[in-house]
Image (cartoon, rainbow, N blue to C red; front, side, top):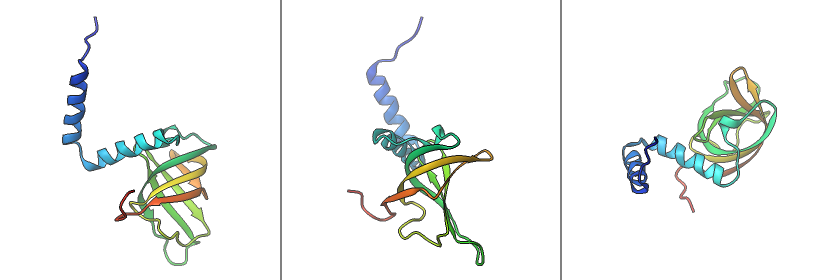
Length: 133
């Protein structure tokens, strides 16, 4: 015999979970829901050599040392996981940095056990400190 929970109880549990969750957890949850709502793929579903469209936030950016070949490398997080995105031959991308909201489209691959995407098309959708519309 299964036990069911009243619909009101689910709403109460959701409110309590949100009241005690960290802002990082809530931001990740919001990013995941937004990506799925707009038809984007999610990082956890990325498989080797598959074209994907991802939407998320830049969680970190690698600064290349002097003398290294130019490249921009970020970690994009969408609430389900993280993928490293690399643009080769570029020293910087204006408006792109930690906290930026970005959409990328290209072929994803696996590098060891990590997901990576090289030279994708991109659109910067928001930068830290900028009000959402």
